[in-house]
Amino acid sequence: MEVTGGCHCGAVRFEAVVRAARPQVLDCNCSICSKTGFLHLFVPHDDFDLLTGRDALVSYRFGSGLAEHLFCGICGVKSFYQPRSHPDCWSVNLRALDDAEALDVDIVPFDGRDWEKAKAALDE
Image 1 (cartoon, rainbow, N blue to C red):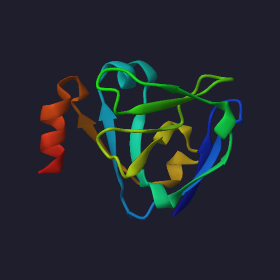
Image 2 (image 1 turned 135 degrees about the horizontal axis):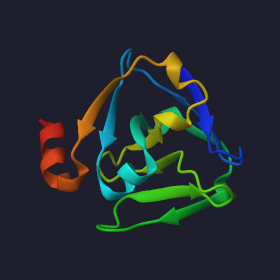
Image 3 (image 1 turned 90 degrees about the vertical axis):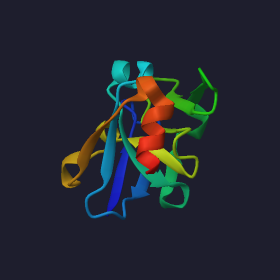
Image 4 (image 1 turned 60 degrees about the vertical axis):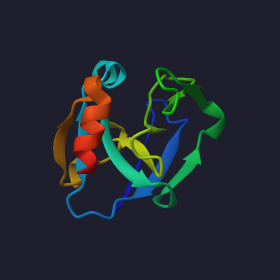
C-alpha cells in the first residue's frame, strides 16, 4: 500500500510503500517518543521517497548519537527519522500519515527506557 504524509505546515512531504498486510508499529516510551507521541512504522529506505522539504529538515541527536531525529524547521514536527534500532529503515510517524486509518496495524509497546533489553527482545 502506498502512503503519503508529512509535517504540519506541509513543507516536508513524503510517500512510502508499506508492504506488510498488517505492519507492526512500535509505541516507544523513551524520553523523546513519550513526549512527542511518535508511533514507529518502519519503512525500508528503498520504499521511502522524500518529495519536498529536504532543506527544511533540522537534525537532532542525543544519547548514543546513532539515531538522527529530523524535524521540520518551520513547524517543528518530526514526521520521520533515522532510528538506531533499524539502520536500514526510516521510522515514519504513523500519526504523520495523511490517512493512517487506511492501514490495519498492530501497535506493540516498546520499552525504550531500557532500550538495549527491548531491542534484544525485538530481535528474537
